[in-house]
Length: 372
Image (cartoon, rainbow, N blue to C red; front, top):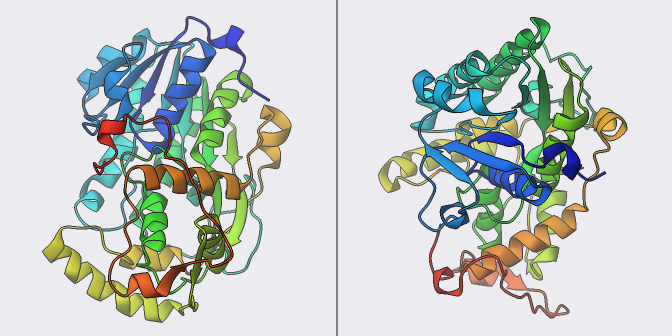
């Protein structure tokens, strides 16, 4: 099912965090449906296409600022609250709770009566499993405590949103899976993983597995949730469930690559590597891989089913291979995928596959040598 233009035409719709991988795709969907998007976010990267979109109202600011939020939210008919920090290391952990929990409280407090609010949560609030078990919205959260800041911040923010729905606000919760896709200008967590792998910088596969969804499909699911979702209900927006060895094999395939070997590392090996990676990150100021909280995530399978969203919203998703081909093409067009040193020997082109991937058409040609 596609979003209904008759529902969106002329509506003023706020997207918090509209520069991110998901938020920006929601903005695109809104424009296609005839809505009038308002983006409340931190300043986008200089080459972000949002900078050139005259048909989008942009307000630069912090979701933690209640006064700013009160200036923007009340005039909107629908609010997509996607703003948040996805951090597993470093400075982001210091304010991850304030952004997710405090930002959610600010949005709910500022919304006018009757405003439909779609709160973007995450599948991590549903929990993971040590086995390849499919979980859904009704699965109990595992009793075992996961010392992962992002999980706890998202769970608390989701609880606040659902409590608001119970008190009479028109709030729907979406739980998108792990996002991948092109136009990743803000360098999402999974986007960084894909680029590292294609550059030959991840020679071992972590244990566990994720449910992967194209951000464009998740964005369409958000609009469908606004149109058809039941207040106080949450909807998993998932795609394909793959272990990391399976996911990395698919990454290699879409890139026409043939790594010499990709052994699966036990979690304790990654735990040791994470300590060294985090020390190195302090010196280089780059995101470490793996970070300690990466390792904790990889101890589980985060596998899900999206039956409720498919049944009640009409949600569907494209094949993950198609998504990753588009992502590879976009990264290639932006010159993200230079392979250097020993990685060129390890991550070799597949001899039987001819690759002729065109540069994506959404970026200006003069910017393709830059690194957003």
